[in-house]
Length: 349
Image 1 (cartoon, rainbow, N blue to C red):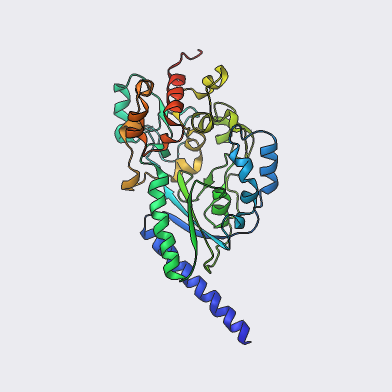
Image 2 (image 1 turned 30 degrees about the vertical axis):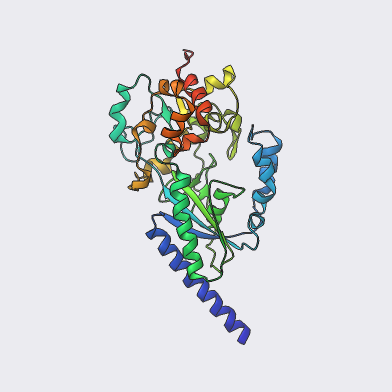
């Protein structure tokens, strides 16, 4: 009986600690937070098949990370839980004529903050940048907040160890977010929160602190909807939940190394960096996504409505000075020059 009482008190303390931690997370600016246990990834076999099919393209690091992605407890020695956060980065629809809840057209207009939409006409060519890259580099913004959250964990659980991740390392963020009760993984492989939609950054803090895990989000609320799959202009989705990255505009403009082939150049279309189409058409975003009021994620006009010609002329020093603190640093000057040239190339009728 004594052992049972001790266990009950320990569980109660873990629950109190977790509730307080989530409260602090919201105070820090995160829009949602949950706790996931670190059992082996339920999608391990799917990852193996996806890699074997070559769908990762030139992202060879995914092959190297596969073992840890399948068993996230191996990422940090002694880790028993993942504190997972969501941060809304949605800047609002650029389609002022769309009514609330109305399904947008598959070929959506330029995704920019409504307040910047008027600038499109002043640029020599209208190109698009994914919403998440229209502000300061999320790695830095979220990295600072996650370090504060990690400090809060250590404050609530003295002696605990922590390690924070923002879209880095072998952390399977979306699977952990689903396990933390924060949403389900849609057919376009995006984590969908029932009240926020999918325009969110996922942050993770691994820890050995004694925390109470949330119940996984078991429901798949996509139903028979295929809007994300059918809207993809490059047919990158082989099947629901299966994407051939080699045909994905986001992969091509961000992760792909080397020059474009003629076919790849045609796939890029007018996207200078990333792509939002499969998210723009999602009913959960149409209905529930709301523009962020986060000042650290406010859109920059040179990112939300860029001039592609400018990237053809930048030297390395100027590129780093202007964009070194943004997500455009990932493909670098060479990659952005390649992307800009592709958006400016003559399009087939």
